[in-house]
Length: 226
Image 1 (cartoon, helix red, strand yellow):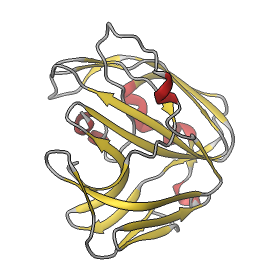
Image 2 (cartoon, helix red, strand yellow):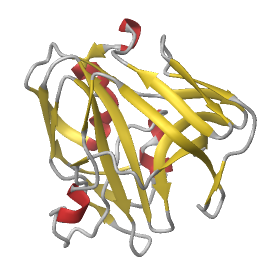
Image 3 (tube, rainbow, N blue to C red):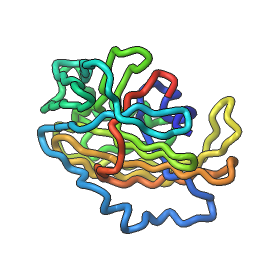
């Protein structure tokens, strides 16, 4: 699923909580409480880094030191298998008007609306150069589900809404349906948690947005094809 939707446009950009169309769009209360969504002016990511096997099992990374960059002035590193990365406000070259920053989300939604279109925004993209790995993300993949977190910076408080839609992806037999989107982001760094759930191979997908930074996801080294 993530290969068809998220990485079809490059970086990990958006998630879907996949269920049958007949299922409720309600988010279970225990999932809503998975983590704190507002991280403040400083984003600190640290902890054990993992690699992912073809069967979606994870193993702790024990390889050489890896430099980590956000594509701007902020950088960190992986030493002895552990990440240490800290950033405050992103480099000015990385900030875009919020409508541009969320442009990659357009295929999954209709009619984006911004309470303040002048807000500047950036989605964190942790880049690495350690073939075959090209980037780092917080995620958890299982046979029938995929979870991940997007770290989003805004320079002022903003509410972002959009209408869900039903659509198809070229070369994909699935039909995807996203529910309405509503993000209340605070000035600084925000964590947006998503979960995909697949059932029976052919499905209709309903997207539910949850804010949070759940600790059970892995800091994972990913390849360009992941």
